[in-house]
Amino acid sequence: MSEALYERYKDALRRGHLAALRGETDMALSAYAEATVLAPDRPLPHVSRGAVLARAGRFDPAIEAFEVALALAPRDEVALAGRADALGRSGRRIAAADAYDRLAEDHEAAGRLAPACDDARRALEQAESKERRRRVERLIAKLRSAAGDTDGEEALARALGVLEGTTAALPEESFREAAAGPATLPDPDLLGRDADLAIESGDDVTAGRLLLEAARLQAAVGHYAAALDACHRALAVVPADPDLHLELAEIYLARGWRTLAADKLVLLARLIDLADDGEARERLCRLVASGFADDPRLTAICA
Image (cartoon, rainbow, N blue to C red; front, side, top):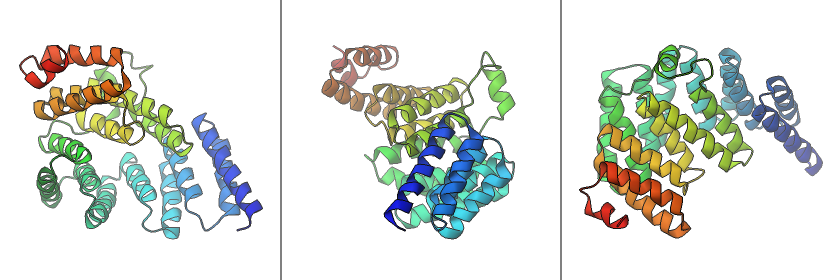
């Protein structure tokens, strides 16, 4: 590809991303189509097109777009995950579970235990089976042996929530009934899609804010596995955001995982000291006073 053609390709992608962020679906799809013509061997325009179509609820063409991307790059994890998600949201739960199984196998084979456990959990949520439950249990055992790995601890917490049977996905109508203001309540899934597009455009701050909002909405209705998933994704783009660490600690505490919550607050205290963030320290100490008055590590921080 010549440099001039590559610049046209990048410009088409940029216009597609910006249109998608503004909710201009048709303009985004048109720009991505232009990018596929300019670079027919690249999977990214097809992946981006699939994400926009899925956000618009057009799951069949979204799945087709992801499959085109996978024909070009069979191990493209974003395309694999997008296809699995679109299958699940379209009600094809068995196919979605099979797709998440494949992702989990790939991650485990590469030694990436935390994402392997997350995808195995998603497969179990889509279609319960003894084999899938055993896989989650086996990955949990591996994660427990890798103590000190923050990503692993968070994947472990999410998986435990599913095995306890308390964090299965709420249907959309249940989510809306469970919170006030159903007509204006944001959709956590759409917030997650907006965050994906913000990440693609390099706006990590906006992505982190959207994912944190999604986490709070899910936690408010007791959907802790989804809330933890949103927080985990946000950590990848805004790892030092004190609000994010506080949200994780509150979710851990709500689930009864006091050790994980306390460890998270100790980490947060270090981040706050580095940033000299008085407001965040005040919020941390309120949480310590309400839930950890008997923990000398934390009370010493707030003394």
